[in-house]
Amino acid sequence: MKNYKLAVIPGDGTGPEVVAEGLKVLKAVSEKCRFKYTTTNYDFGGERYLRTKEVLPKTAVKELKTFDAIFLGAIGHPDVKPGILEKGILLKLRFDLDQYINLRPVVLYDERFCPLKDKTPDDVHFTVIRENSEGLYKGLGEFRNKGKKNEVAIQVSHNTRKGVERCLRYAFEYTKKFGRKKKLTLCGKTNVLTFAFDLWERTFHEIAKEYPDITTDYAHVDATTMWFVKNPEWFDVIVTDNMFGDIITDLGAMIQGGMGIAAGGNINPNGVSMFEPIGGSAPKYTGKNIINPLAAICAMGMLLREVGEANAADLIETSVKKIVREKLKTLAAGKMGYSTAQVGDLVVENL
Ligand code: IPM
Ligand code: MN
Image (cartoon, rainbow, N blue to C red):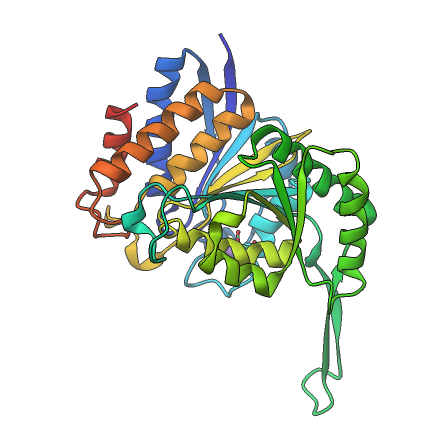
């Protein structure tokens, strides 16, 4: 029997509440699908930082590398200056564990929850593959004359051929395996970012030659946001850089019903991957047992698919879809008609 070694980082705010539901579903599905697992908790996050003044222990990355996967709740604390925890924990783990893919499915389970008029689950069903290790997130740049009238702030998007190519190759393979229409769209800004997206576009067309069965397409990022709203059914798999991927996946989350259901994976195809609900720590809902745990539960489904438990992942997806369609009043915190824990129970009951 397989025995998976999972690291759990509940994190800040509502993170621990949604992680608990993800683990509840993991327990149930492991019994059904007959696999074992152990979990090891890590207290990384704002509370720990405020207590110890240390964002991440020195040994964290080394230790995390020994797991089969990582399950993360949320990082972000109202008493900590923005940027410290995000850069020091979330981005550091993505970079140091070389999780160069951020996989974000945009799937609408019930048209009641779509803010777009007349769009159905058949229309809103695509995946964004966001480059997760480079671009503007590399943090390159500088201030010149900081604080003076002639101040200049420079922030550079750093794109390497190696980084772009491995992301695009993942995207082509993903489209081949999972694409509903075998169509891959590159989202960029070739008309303005004539260095970065020239590299992306050239590499895209080069690799496309190896995949004659995949239809390729290109959309500028601004137009992409327009199509998300007007014609989301045009998309199958979208690949884009780190910054654009960050932005368009928040819009993606909204058209699939909101942050309550949006999950993502930070993937290192040759190493340890980390799965998380993509919404934040939601301080105002913390401790109230009203936050929607489905994003975390879906992230657990993605984790299981990545480690090789596709059956378990399918069971979770089917159960989530069923309770979204048949039980929940809305996907928003406090308005679901059920508490956080009850939603977890419903998913378990319908597995
Ligand atoms: C996300 C988040 C992060 C990002 C922040 C918290 C650093 O917005 O996962 O999309 O920008 O990647
Ligand atoms: Mn984001």
